[in-house]
Image 1 (cartoon, helix red, strand yellow):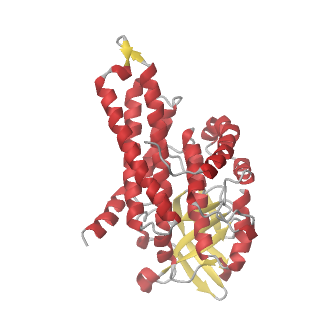
Image 2 (cartoon, rainbow, N blue to C red):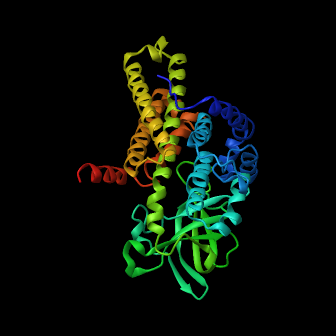
Length: 382
């Protein structure tokens, strides 16, 4: 059963995205992995082709396009070639950093920061996780203390996607120890801010081209205008934006699963063992039949989630279900793909092996899948 999510307009846009991927992404993927970073020129080219900042208002150079299906097209086309590192960077930039600015920035902040998101000249990141606090956001230790007309930021963050390239980082910090859930706020820290330094580019199992970094803030003095939203509203802002982040992760997982399933089906049709095709053996044939069914059912649910987001009816629980299901399914599909490729599936020259190491993080970031289950059961059993 084919998805009916996209219209003729989305398919026309797909051609632009596919040409960008063919010209700018496929020839450079191996080099990005070796260099452990994606060059800024790729970001600028993506901006020039209309792949970034689609939702930015026209007055700031954007298309004011709020139909998330266009973002899904970008996700799908990047997943088609297995460029997970680029997909992660673009999603962090558009679905997370830009989304926070669109929701919470005042007029001056919008004028200062939004134009660069459409051109690819401004790369954004979000800094929540810390060495001692990941999914437990209330346990962060980074603080921001008011000092006259400034805020003084101290602390460290880790596992920050786009952490090396980012021109601005949205930092989640504690502003009032005694205020409980209202004791957290968001700040925008720009490159060049005194006291803001980047640590090492982290050496990860997968997503090798993704510049994941440690960030440090040592008496970093921020102007009052760096506050994003209101004091004490940082945690509610995060909760408001997490469904989109999780939907983006779910879509990345879904499209990856679809792609790898296609690679695996092609392989077992061609590869011969013991005088016949692997596909002619009942065990792998049944495995692939089950996975094909699961992938199509999953796609139907995610299509509904995308449409719900467009109508502003996507709930936190629905997004948690999408992330939980799609990332678990992605694991099952890719693990089976590696197994059916045999020894070749363990060689990084084969895209299925790269997909295997890139996918592992999907069940961890954006809130672990155990946290997704907690969100779901809390509503179910209330």
